Image (cartoon, rainbow, N blue to C red; front, side):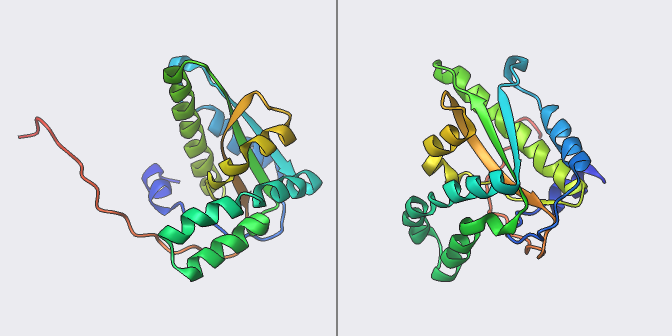
Length: 190
């Protein structure tokens, strides 16, 4: 798959088939994610891949974040969109696998920011590799509202949660979201 094609065609999926992707495919995706660049090559990440009862227990914890998240969503989205998101959070779209990305927490705020940026590069690699394998994902940060509960469940109370993603075969192709008009400055290109 062409890189530009992957970047332009990857979408956030919110409806999944119950079919479990083969572990070998998930391992390829994780390996590609782990090749992300990181500040000072710290590779400050840990991934937890969950299926079965672990996925179910984890989703139950994540769904608790919706209460706090709805306060924000009411200011940003119409009622119909709020309901779709609430339904998605209740079971993460039925995805058979969920991946949590946790990071080492550093007391120096500059180094910690570098860890977060490094984790974001890993997450992007993961999403693009999953797309190349024919799987859907959805980068989710709304679950940060229940970060402590998630970290306790994962046995990583001294870490920080970057994000999670459900992963599986898409049951519905998402529409192309509009791109916002953002400034791009070109200096020295006369």
